[in-house]
Length: 418
Ligand SMILES: *Cc1c(COP(=O)(O)O)cnc(C)c1O
Ligand SMILES: [Zn+2]
Image (cartoon, rainbow, N blue to C red; front, side, top):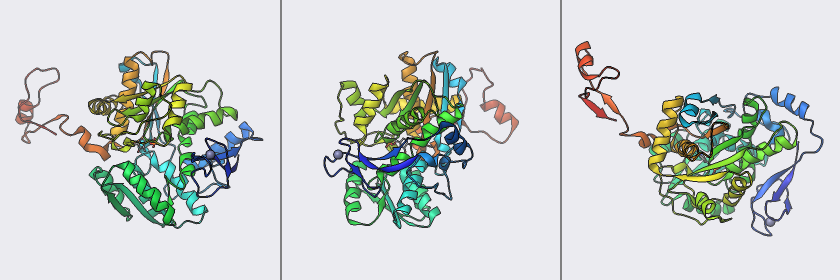
């Protein structure tokens, strides 16, 4: 597949493959265009299967002339069948795409690997980002691996785990007094005056392409078929819409057959501008001020909100918002039924799946892929004080006295909430 250039999503004006992201004519966002003609599905599939065991196996569908390399290559994360979760919810088939298994433990490694490779191709020597946390980890790590400078801008009140897991890579870490939308505004100004590649600002069209690889992997790992439905978190809406695009591309090229999946979006009630617009029947999102434990989804003014709304509606899906308590319960539900510990964003996704099952919108006849996008160890506060630990002396007597036998009703003494 040949990359043809950038084009405006709104008015179609075309631009060269440079560090551009907004249309001069209408201020619409730019995206990468490809020429699909002449692709043979059989040989495309063989090239994929002969490729690397990460996202660069899909280089033919990404904005590069030849496959890049990464010292820490993301992708091919596990797609695991979650029968115990499916049974508990009364859903036919649930598959968990565990993207916490990427190099810096979130799906952001995919978008950063693509943005950074393109930035190097375009001649940049410094990368930067405005981040809600996971992007910070990924930019700092991939810049370190590539040996280039990085600047990472985050809201100063971010989870400590995410700050530490960024600083360790030796980046220039900047905590901004304000929320993500303030950070993003500052970075838009900086992108115009510094010669840096801000992965999610001036090279955003390339960054966004990285999310398509989640769709490609899903198809490959399901044995070259499409799921009936997907449940996916929404922050800016880029991930959600690009997974849709990935499925569409492969179907139109004949790499996979069947109906396109129904798309269910997941947001936190404390920052749910896309869910609110969906509920109100609006085409655009009214910006909100985030107040949720799901900080990695806390974008109050989502750039791709309108496109996410469109995908949810045209596919016959939905966009839900879940409370912080539901998010905590979602984390526990996933951990207890699948052995996968996710961060708050994954709690949003799991809670939304549970809600859809509860409403009967997803049922016994459905096969659902659930995108778990980040790691639980990064948001430990979300499970703090959630369960008890028995505290005993190192003797059999103490164990017998304090830890009740399975099914026993005796109140355990000496426990501590952790
Ligand atoms: C960034 C992020 C998302 C979604 O990002 P979009 O801006 O909608 O592309 C989802 N989950 C996690 C854990 C994230 O860090
Ligand atoms: Zn335009």
